[in-house]
Length: 377
Ligand code: GDP
Ligand code: MN
Image 1 (cartoon, rainbow, N blue to C red):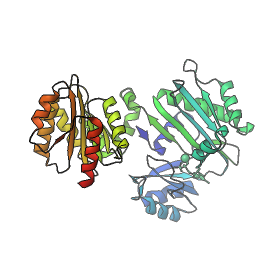
Image 2: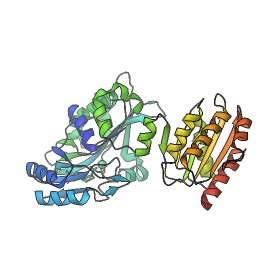
Image 3: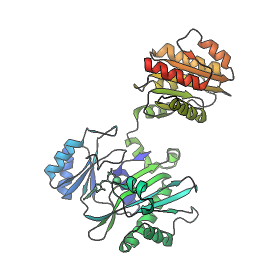
Image 4: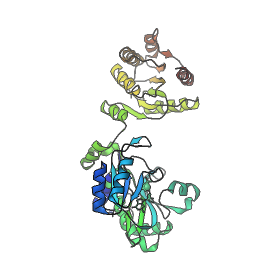
């Protein structure tokens, strides 16, 4: 689950990390009120995506009138596929430096890792690509957490102003704490600003929580309700279907994460673009297959569907029944290719005879077929 900037900042503030004064607003009048209270301010569109600054979704306002106009201009707009419904209006920070600080999980060391740089701000990706030496890391031993001397060394390696070290260490320690306590997968501050007065403050905030840990975070549930998930993913979640939306046009359904991932790769390799990841899991019955297919078809970009089922505990005839029930009740106009092997695959394929479904025995060939048929559809 991704938190909005204003939510992440709430969390940070509770953890004792300095953040600018600000208010979340959802209409231009509220933005004007907030600006009256705060004085010169920044109007920041709230979206689950970065790069707002460069796209004109972060703007400075000198007056409440201007804040109101900026708010009216941003609300209702779409940024990277997200409709802007909320803004954060914050006091303007006058900064002399923009640092970067994050905690995430490092797969290589299987540990939390802290990342810092003196060159934060909107071009951090570029810095990472062109001068990786400007970015310093600290792999954290979870048994101890980051120790102060390690954080001081991190600040030094990252090239921070030594005068900011004490505040940086304090913020980094708190950021690690809130990352760990919330079962987060990412806690990022970019930029971590140094003000003209020498105060270090979190000017932006990104926070991702591991969904699998949400059950033990009652304090984060309010954010869950507010978070604008993809509507299809949300519906899939309600119905217990494992589904991730991608941006292509070939729907992919399989019985297990491994086979679905492989199928995505195969579709890509034959020149297609998967529209989703959909895993019906092991031992799926007809009803489950019907649910999964109806979820996949909710995406109006779909031009074809590929089923890839390897029967172990999943039975081919059950999957075939589900597909047939779904096609009977859903009025499907796009081509659907079915590849099936293993337990009761023959029975399954037999059931599909005479239907509009295209059975193909070999997976790469099945992917080619669905991609070709989708082009014609
Ligand atoms: P992002 O582009 O979505 O990551 O949004 P950020 O919150 O990081 O803002 C992008 C940039 O806007 C920052 O790097 C700053 O240069 C600028 N910015 C954001 N807040 C302030 C502020 O309070 N004062 C000033 N002067 N600039 C700001
Ligand atoms: Mn940022």
